[in-house]
Length: 342
Image 1 (tube, rainbow, N blue to C red):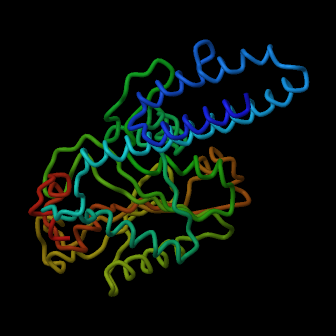
Image 2 (cartoon, rainbow, N blue to C red):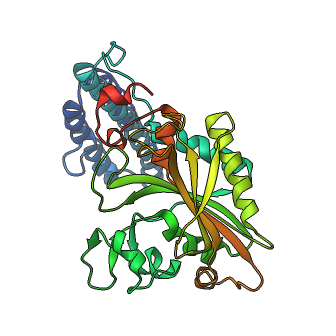
């Protein structure tokens, strides 16, 4: 009986080496290890005719042989599966190393300047924050001191989204993140928020309905307008690599008190007058001022203890000054002749 089992094992191993594919392997496995008609089980059925001692000895050998054969068949199966996959890959192989005529992309000019600004402000210990472009009426208007009946809404009541719960609007300024930032980080706080904003505008060389801003917010003690001017001069010099002439004009913005318009001398025409500066020699760059007490309260900050300043930088217009671009509409035109220059 022992010799019969050893001979069967040798026979299976010999046939196993010649198996060409998974289908033949399955046939061989069923032939020798099948539960009902398998050759090994036929041998084991004859154990009943042996003595108790011989039955124990032969049965142990049979189990060992069965375990060995199962391992051999499993190893063979893995080899055949790998061979099958390799054959399929060889048929479907594509040489990805072949040269492809494809132009490399490049950053949009607004992105280039935005990243520069972020580096400048990070050097001044400002955080870089973000906020949703689809904003609630509360954060876009009410939280920054612009209630529903405020006349300042007239220019900004623009693209609303139908919503059963909240009145949602495509944000009209990045100032919508001011109160979000104060509620999350408290005081003191230094942060800028670059991003895209949307307004209903009559399009011309200096007006677009989709453009980019960069909001700045500083909350600390004993803040004055001198801090605004110093920060803006540092910013302009960092971007234009030279001193830039700026001026402050009184201006009303609901979320600051007092409020100012900060202008810079037009770099397109050097102050002589052109279509970009509307022939005034000056370009309005940003509104700014000291943060209104109502906005501080909305952010959960005590206006009797803390003060701050905020500004909304016209990022798109700043890029126009940086590169001497005369028409704001070029930025969203997707014209490759324009974009490839940067």
